Image (cartoon, rainbow, N blue to C red; front, side, top):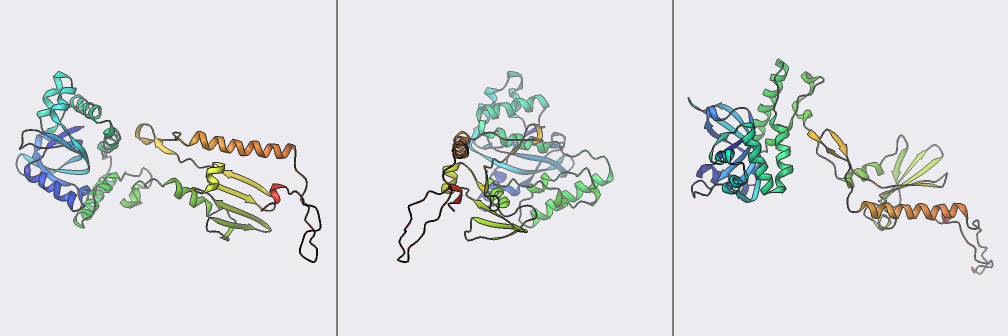
Amino acid sequence: MVAILRCTSDEETFLTNLRRQGQFEAGWESVGERDAWKSSHVVLVVTGQASGRPLVEYVGHAKSGRRAGTFRKTIEVTQLHRIRPPVPMDQLSDLMHPRHRRVAGLSGALTKRAGEELLDALTTSRADLADVIARLQERVGGFRILSRVRELFVEERDATGLALQLGGFDRSVIGEARFPEEDGARVPILATLPGHPAHEDHLVFHDAQRFSDWIGSDAEHLAKRVFRKGDQKLFIANVNRLPAEDTLGIDLIYHHVNRDSFVLVQYKKMQQMGAGRSEWGYRPDADLDDQLKRMRNVEEACSKLDSAPPLDYRPSILSPAGSSSARPSRRHPREMR
C-alpha cells in the first residue's frame, strides 16, 4: 500500500536536525488519524505545507502503531530516502489520470489503484527513484501471523528495533529481518538479517587466500600465496587491478609448479535479480568485451606454442672468467620464471 504523510513545521525542523546530526536514517514517530493509517505502507513524506507549495522530499516505510488518543494513532516512519531536489505535488498530480488527481491533496493511506498511479507518476518524474521504491515495496508486505511463534518473532523484532533507536542507532535495518521458515523458534532475530553484498575485490581476495584442503603460507610477494599438499606446490597470484590484469584480462593466476600448468580466472560478481530478488544473474559491464578479447589473445598465443614449440631450454656454460663460452640459447617460455 501507498500513503502520504504531510509534515508539520515541527516535523520538518526535526528531520532537518536529524540530517545535521548524522542520524537521518533513524526515522521518527508521527501521529495521524486512526482510520487513515493501517498496516504498512510505502510513504511519500511531504514538506512545504506552510508555504502552500507541498513538495515530496522523502520516501520511506510507514507502519501504524499504538493508539495516541481516541481517534488517533502513532505512525512509525523508517528507511527514509531524501529526494533531491524535492518533487512538487502539483507536478505529480499533472502526471496522474484525472480521476486520481485528487489524492495528491490527501493524507494517509491511499487505495491500491491511486497509490500505484502516484508511484508511477513519481518514478516517471524521477527515474532514479525506481530502485529505491522497489526495495521499499518488497518490505511493505509485512508478516502473516500464523502462529504464536511468529507473533513472538515480530515482538522480538520490534523490541530490538526500539532498543537500537534508544541507543542512538539506526533501527531501520531491523525491519529487514524475515521469519525463518525452518527452526524459526530457535533462530536469534539478528541472525535473520540479510547479509550485505560483498565487493568483487573482496571476493577475489577471499579466494586467493585459500585452496581446498591445501596448506597455505605467505610467498615473497604480498599479492601471492603458496599452497602445498604432499610434494605438490601451487602458487596463487592476485593480479586484480595490477598491470597483469590490463594485459591478460584476468584477476587470479593459478600456477601448479609440479605440472607447470596455469589457470587464469576472471571474476564477474552475480547479483540478485527478478521479482523479490529471488534469482541470481550477471549483467555485462563495459569491460567484459575487452577482457574476453585479451583472454582469447592469450589462448591463441598458447595454442601456437603447442603447435610449434620452441627449442628446449639449454643452459649456457660460463667460463672461469664469468663470460659465456656457449652460444646464446633459446628458452621455452614456461621455463622463464
